[in-house]
Amino acid sequence: MVIPLKNPRGTRPGLAPITSAAGRAAATRLIRKLRVRRMGSKAGYSRTRFGPNWADTARGVPYAGNGCDTRNDLLARDGQNVRYRKGSDCVVIKMTLRDPYTGRTIRWRKKHAGLVQVDHVVPMSYSWRMGAARWPKAKRLRIANDPLNLLPVYGPVNQAKRGWGPGSWLPPARKIRCAYAVRFTQVALKYNLPVTRADKATMLAKCR
Image (tube, rainbow, N blue to C red; front, side, top):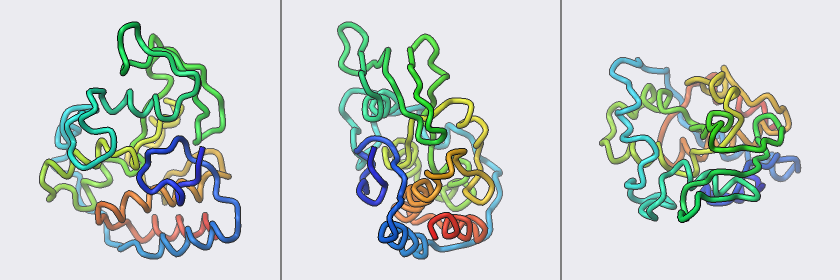
């Protein structure tokens, strides 16, 4: 696992804690760049507004067009001891995952698929309410399938997160919270998304 400050494209695995004073200072400088605004309405939102689930057709993001769906790309990126379905270079059927949000080690099998879910760090409903409702569909497809915005995690924790920003939800593992704030910030800056004032204040507090 690597710290998000050294993983600006999201192509390296996991989410490592930011523990050094220099790292936290860099994190704080990055978070301060975020614009703030009030959260808008959720009216009109649906998952389908961001394109098909785990589409390989998003242009301009890593892994796009490689013939594998996004979920399997992310399982392969973050999993250890990955095994694929016979005859396939894409479909992951078995792996071990170190969940960054809880610190637990998960021995995952495809027959229990929901035990690991791929989290959108900046939730799609959050991005919708903060401006994505006005984006072209191609841009929404990118943020939904951008590996920078995606982390395989323990399923029940992902479900508990729902569509909240950092001011209302943070990973249970306290040591990872600054790194999570940085990853959230990286996505927001890449897609020119503002955040709420409360979310920005929380992210700054977790990296001080």
